[in-house]
Image (tube, rainbow, N blue to C red; front, side):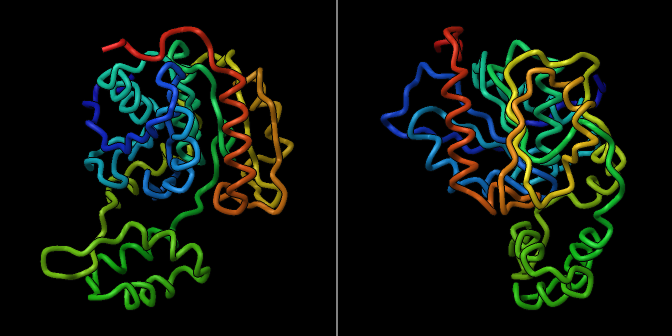
Length: 277
C-alpha cells in the first residue's frame, strides 16, 4: 500500500437500543461527491437490527482533505477506522466509488469482511465522465454565492439535470462570511481522478459472500463486465433492480434496503464482531 498517511475519518455511528450488539456491524461507503449524510434514511432502517457505521471517505463530507485517492489509500483509511473502533468483522456495503473501496477492503483484508455488498459498480476502469460536475462545483467556489438558489443557477451552466445539481448541493455549506462554500476536497479529488476511475486495489479474488446490486437503467454494470466481476468476486449474487439507475438506493429505496438487510442477515456468522471492549 501507499506510504501516504491514513486519514482519521468522520463517520456516523448508528444503532437503535434494540439492535443486537452481537451481530456484525454494517459499514456503509458512499460514492464520489457523496457523504454519510446521504444514507441517513437507510440507516434508520438498518440500525434497528445492528450497528451501522456510515463513513465519510477522505475529501468528502466532514472528513479531512488530503492528497491521494487510490483505492489502496481509501480502503486503508476505512480499515484503520474499524481497528480504532474495535471492529473485527463487518458487512461492507459500498456504492459506486465506495463500492470499489469496499471491494479493495475485502480483497486486501478479507478477514474483516463477513460479506460484501456492491452497489452499481464493477471492478473495471471507467472512462472520464465528471468534467461537467467538477466545473459546476468550481463555479460555485469561485463565485461564492450568498444563497443556494444562486449556487444552483451557477451549476446549471454546466449541469442540466436538476437531480444531479441537488446531489451536488449536498456538498455546499455556509462559510464564516455567509457565502456558499464547498466542504468537499475538490482539488484533491480532481488531482486523484485517474485513480478514482481505475480498478479497485488488491491482487486476489474475494472468496466471501457477495451481493452486487445494479440498476436496470444504469450502464455501470453491463453484461460484458460480468466475467471480470466474477473473476474478482467469484461468489457474487447479482440482482438487478427495476426502474433504477446508478443511484439505485435513491430510485428504489425500499427494494435496496430490503435486499441489503436480507443478505446481511443471511450471512451473519459466529466470529466476534468486536474486541469486546
